[in-house]
Image 1 (cartoon, rainbow, N blue to C red):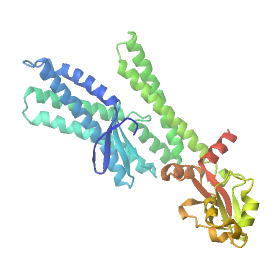
Image 2 (spheres, rainbow, N blue to C red):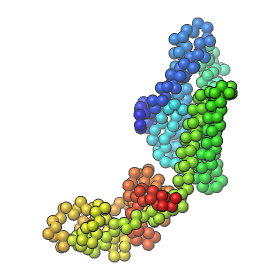
Image 3 (tube, rainbow, N blue to C red):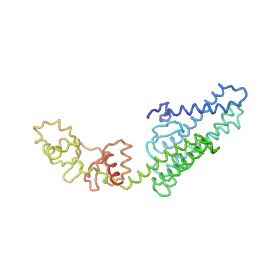
Length: 368
C-alpha cells in the first residue's frame, strides 16, 4: 500500500491513512479552531482542541461516506480491498468493477446519500437538543461540511461520485461502459480545468473566488480524469480484439506421440527461449504441458525409450481461455487473478498457442 499506514478495519475492510492526511488534519485543526475562537471564554488551547475534534469528525464523515460505497458494493457481491484516507478525502478500492449500469449507479450514489444522512442527523441534533454553544457550533459545522461533501461529490465528472453516476447513465443509454467512462472522464477534465483556472486567479489576486485549495483540487481532478480517459481508450481498443489475436507467434507446442529424445531434438535444442511446452494430441487438442525441469528426472540414457506422455502434466481449467474471448476480459483476468499466461483454445478445441501480458502489449503497439 505504498507508504499508507493501516489503522484498523471494519466489516472485513482494512482502513489505511496516507501520510498526506496528517497535513490536512493539522490545517483542519487550525482552520476549525479559528471558528471556535470567537466563542467567549475560549482560549487558544481549547479552540485548538475543538478544531482537532472537528477535523477528526470530518474525516470520520469521509470514512462513513466511503463505507456507504463499500457496503453497497459488498451487497452487490463485490469485495472491497481497502479504504484509504488521503489529502483530498477518501478512496474505496473495489476488487472489480460493477457489472451493470444499475449496479454502478447504486455503488456511486451510496456515498453521497450517507453524507446527506449525516447532514440531516447533525441538523436535527442542533435543532431539537439543547446544547452548550461549543457543541451547537460543532454540530452546525459538521452538518454544513457533510452537506458540502455530498454536493461536491455529485459533480458529474470523474473521479467524483457524480462522474460514476454519469458513467452509469451513459452506459445504460449506449450499452457501452467504455463510452460512459470516457465521457465522464472528459467532463471531469473540464471541471478540473475550471477549478485550476479559478484557483490560479484567486492565488494571483485577480479574483476573490476560490483559493489555493481550489487550485490543488483542480489538479487532482485533472490528473485522475485524464487517467480515467486513458483507461477508457485502452479498454475500447482491447474490445476490438479477441484472445486469438494476441497469441504468441510460434508458441511452444509439441505433439504427444514422441519420445523424450525426439522432443528434445525437435523442439528444445536451439529454442532455449521456452521453459515450458504445450503438448497436443494428433488432432491438435490439448493434452497438457511439460516443463523442461522435468527432463532432469529422467536419465538421458533412457530418453529414447521414454514416451513424452510420461512427463506431461494437466493444464488447470482456469489457465485456458477461448480464442473468441474479448481481449479486454482477458486483460482483466490477467490483472485481477494475477495469471501470467493463458493457453488459448480455438472453437474446434484445437490449441492456438500461448497468450501473455507482453503479447497483448505487443499487439496494441503493432496496431497503434
